[in-house]
Image (cartoon, rainbow, N blue to C red; front, side):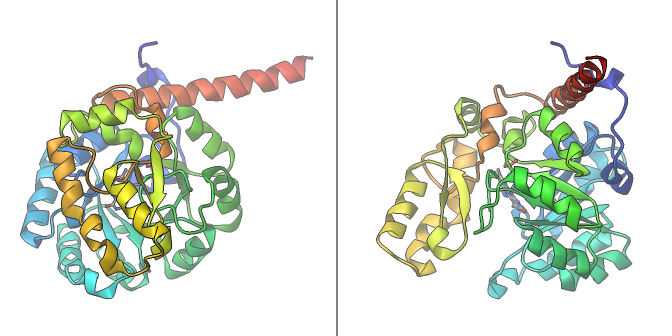
Length: 339
Ligand SMILES: Cc1cc2nc3c(=O)[nH]c(=O)nc-3n(C[C@H](O)[C@H](O)[C@H](O)COP(=O)(O)O)c2cc1C
């Protein structure tokens, strides 16, 4: 069926109002991948995207990337992803990057990892919204107390870091809106528009996608890598680093198996794993298309990615699926009223 969501009524939520976007969709930060081209394609398709700051560790480079995104997106709001490491020594670069983000006055930051509390006033003073991403409601509650504008909540299905409690998205979706006052965005395993409808029905204000977007034509990655995602089933994602209490859902490949082998030997020191965890391996894999190497964040929603396509096509199809699901539920309730 051809995409037709531009003829559909818009779905308006607290998230679309907060960010001034057309669809209640966030496309989360993608380390080494989410650059100006990709993020501009996302915002031009009516969703919200985030440049991954740590992909541009030199502040001047990040500033240039933000400027490029501004040019490509014609003034539409866009965001930056800031990963706050639980390891203080790994956050040295973060302060300088924060200054760039603030000076450039992007619309919104997506924080993840450590406590966003200390940076919230710094961002708010510049009129920048903060959405914090967490893997469990209990972390969401403390981020809400610290003053974030919205919460992204990811379930165990997600590519990247599902948290050590590994709570499923279906549980998060129904639980979080009961306990939080700020808008809630559901992530983890989302790749079909009917899941947006379900999330909204459970009280969420929008959804977040990562893995589903890995086949976007605009993403700067080798075609063989994207083709691997197209061929993926989602059953080919595994969780590694649980021994380090840093659960990480990635593509099942040689590096992931090597990490698991060390875990099975009972190794608990980061140093034993460092040569396998290096981000450079992943960066090279995206560039070369050799998906045997590197810990490549990858979630169960790969099952929804059937082709390498422009972002606009993915988002339009997704919204069409959401509207179809709304109709299905409306028909169900009409049928039960008439019977
Ligand atoms: C390849 C890849 C790279 C990612 N890099 C980051 C990152 O740098 N920072 C971050 O906060 N989240 C990162 N994530 C997580 C996504 O932003 C998003 O939270 C997650 O993918 C949502 O779950 P899903 O994969 O099931 O859609 C990454 C995910 C993927 C698939």
